[in-house]
Length: 203
Image 1 (cartoon, rainbow, N blue to C red):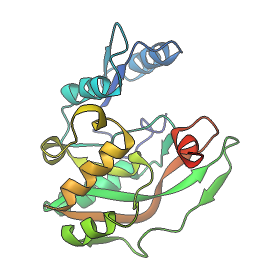
Image 2 (cartoon, one colour):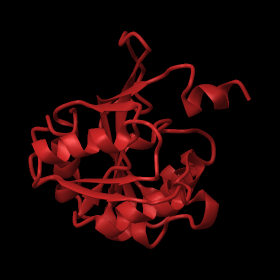
Image 3 (tube, one colour):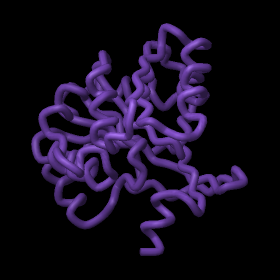
Image 4 (cartoon, rainbow, N blue to C red):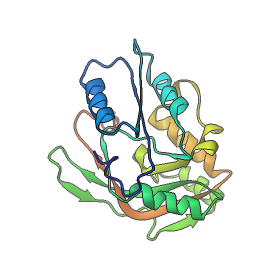
């Protein structure tokens, strides 16, 4: 619902179902009936793993920019509009990062301090150095990428669609392009006991 509540309306949602056993496919079909011009769907007959599933979405994409949107995240209504505005105004940027807030299993919001104290443009080499020391964006959905740039720098193999693979992508882009940062918490990330984040924290 948060995707279709965006103030920026020229969007598409590419959804690939990896032979799921839950209600994912039926929910996607409901949304495609409600927003037929904005949904692009495909479904695997068997589970081919996350990398193949991600590749399905990449093949469907028509957009100039994209977000790798995770199921535990919620977009604030101005997320897409603000990111697109930054990318359009700064063609030398490879990606733009937004700040996030966290919500728990009960929907209780906790604001996090922004990584940088203001919205800014960061020279790519400086950002690459930061990536070596810290996670600027702990949630994958905090980034909007330039599609053509990301295509040529993505990790391949088993890392392609996984969290650490996208961190490699971010680093690779920052070695060649400047990075935009938006201080506003435009993403809400839900943390719960079954999430990958929680499981990683306990490892």
